Length: 91
Image 1 (spheres, rainbow, N blue to C red):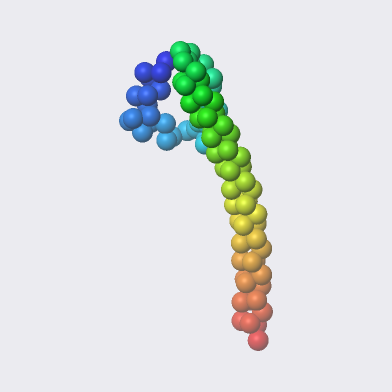
Image 2: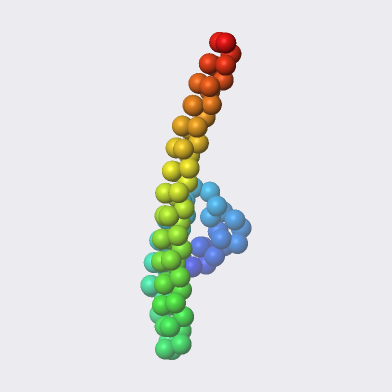
């Protein structure tokens, strides 16, 4: 993995297009797992970063599920509102 290229893309904002959040977190996880740590302290930092990344992924999935549920509820309410408006217009 070319870290210079990845860093350059990140700094230039090119990472914002094309990839999903989960694919970006997967790439970060792979980069962290491939780091060669020299000290125990560095290893602990990488492990902590991986753990935090796991929590981010879980939280993102939960938010995606909630968003889907809310979008479905919104669609249903919009349809009900449309039906009510049509029935009032017919009176």
